[in-house]
Length: 437
Image (cartoon, one colour):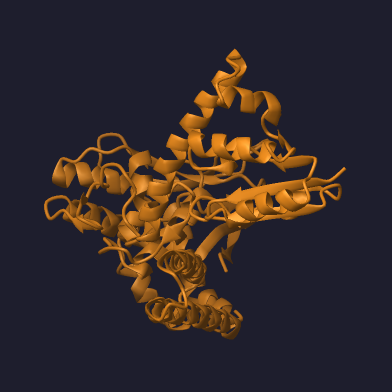
């Protein structure tokens, strides 16, 4: 008993399938990518030595329309080959009867309807895929701040400054809720916090296009944030995710950073006022202390002063101990890979002009390379900034911290500090800084 199999994949929609999916019982596997030359070869081979069974996944793989599928089913069955669709519970003999209008079983008519719907859906998806190859925007309304052009997104001069100001506000203070409130106050533009978070992570605002297959193509239009700003936003978002709820937008710079070394409870900022006066006292107290008596609160200003003193000493030392040459090597390697792939893209038009590649293959190769470049650029952006040593030296001066406002201090603290641990020794206490790197 001779069993053969046929696989068809559309390169615009899916990667090629592995012939090994059919197992060892199959004597020969015919496989096509885009065209159907191997299907024609299968028919010619069966005219010489007919097989008993032909395995396919779905009937749609035999043609782009119901008429094509019908013709090939009739042609193959006439050679004495029975077709088995492994993902559809129909064999060739009754199906061929239905396609030649000799049988009107309800189940087979339903299958024909499904094949027509699949063919229509495939044509739509192929159209979207061709647009992806040309780096055209996906269907739908342009994001706020842009308008649709002929082949790319264009800046909307009335709304783009609003979005850009939102990004700058978030980068300056590191507070998503604060940036949302700023937008409403200055521009009367009301957005939810979840919408603001989507703005911060939307590839379109970074000059990239993202499609439903989760692939990203870089540098397709004018961005509203630079690559450096995008990397900074990503670091801030990662940092904020590890913070307790709402502390990312807290007005005090130490909020969400301090824990008690005795009870391991996070410490929150408490404000105490004196009746009939404007005097205000700030304390840090454990929020969930299990001890009895509970760990006492400590003066906020004293902890802030010692934090500034410790960071000016400990930060340059911690940065000096980092393996920055290794990070620089990774960055150089990623940059070389990006440059190499870009060089290949630049050569493809010449190969197409000389006939070495056809236009469709060239477009597919360009698309694949551009998505790989986007992935490498994402890895590059996630690395620490190159000037970390220079930055550590600049902020090691106490005056730098004292000249900042509380929101500005909050931004810089969270850029470097993961946690501040307070250790008590009777009525005295000491703090230890745990850096992010």
